[in-house]
Length: 305
Ligand code: PMP
Image 1 (spheres, rainbow, N blue to C red):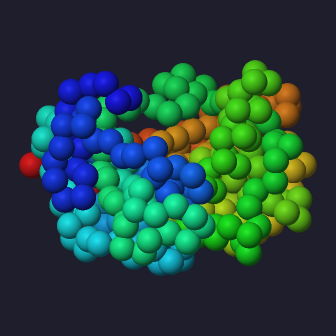
Image 2 (tube, protein in one colour):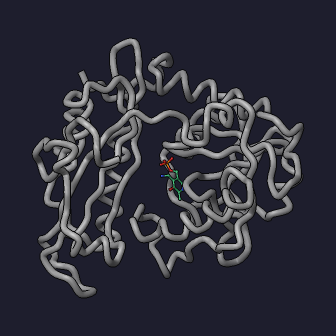
């Protein structure tokens, strides 16, 4: 990732991609205390459009507040940084990685409060779980790792260190020949994927875990809005592992994963073992919205041009 042409927004400046570096004594590298976002821009008829940029930036600032980190930039500056990196790198569509981390000013558990560094990087990135996964669905495994407890790590914060849990769960699933992990919460109920929220469809209704055990995903919110448009009821409730097995359909939502059908869990076919009808409808509407073909949601798009 480090050896390529392009520019990264780094503390207010657009710097050369190869020069966007930090020291090995960077505090966040040692302890994982940082906050980040994953954002996408899509190619539309009017150029690259960032999807729900303000909501993502808001969540970045909320994450920082939760972990007690003070960002030295305003939300407007971070929003503008996204648009600047799209233009500087000539991107038609991309994935963004905004991140705030503590620099190398001081080591030891307590960070130097005013040593907060902020980056916004952007690069072209296709379907996270594969084009085939979007069409045919993916295979998942319920993880042997438990999702975070709200009072151990702050689940509403999209915080760097929280992702050790996601990485271990995802690696375990992939090593076992699956595409992604599904994590249960500390009580044994379904929480979310390693980097995705989860929805279950049964009897024409949608079910998803409440936000006490899962990240408040922006694609989750989008899927709920689409479901309402389609006249589908969405119920937030505790979901058990066996409810997954007997679901008509299961799908993941996430900025990287978009709307990805899950066709198999723990070697059991979900529904017909392919992308379900309701998942397909939500996915279609999702791409219409993000690619600027649905005027009702024009407010969710910020054009880079
Ligand atoms: N849960 C986790 C653990 C995630 O990392 C993500 C990706 N940010 C999501 C859910 C989905 O959130 P969003 O739709 O905002 O990308």
